[in-house]
Length: 238
Image 1 (spheres, one colour):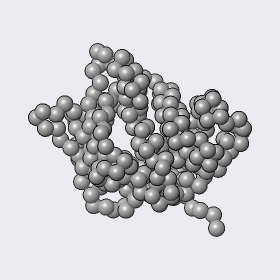
Image 2: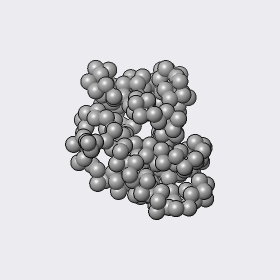
Image 3: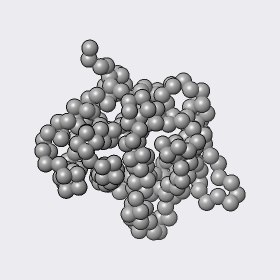
Image 4: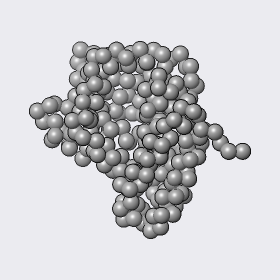
């Protein structure tokens, strides 16, 4: 019996598949040089075949009403790539490097002005209000496979503007259900580039995937005057 794709993800399937093909285009040279793979046509087909499996496994967490649906749709494809590379004996560290550099390259194809505008919107007072509301809603556990998190206000001595403590992670639940625990930390590593390319500094010292009680995300804006240098520095650090 064929696996069923949730109708919400089916609606976005074309865009998700196009993003996967784009990632493979960006990753091709690295897959040859760092992973030692030569049959790129075969690897592409394997990854796309695995992606067809992955999209049947993505849990529904509220669709357009949940900000976490977008996280799943943007990042779950890296599970497909990582599964295929592991089957070909590629070390986890190399998989992580390829994933991060591919994701960074893909993010940078978006015009800088658009990325920074999105970052400003994320850091805005209005969005912080929305995040508080969504954090409270997440604790109702309406969708068992969803993320559960708290909004964190800065204290008097804190330098961050706001934070999020993820007490339960949808990717961790997904990985546990489907046997992807060993590649999960590579997914976590994508967060730093995602925020840096949008003009946001992310500080995080622990993760659920690493065995901590929660993931402690702390956000602050990169200084506008030094935006280009700061952004480059953020990206080079990872």
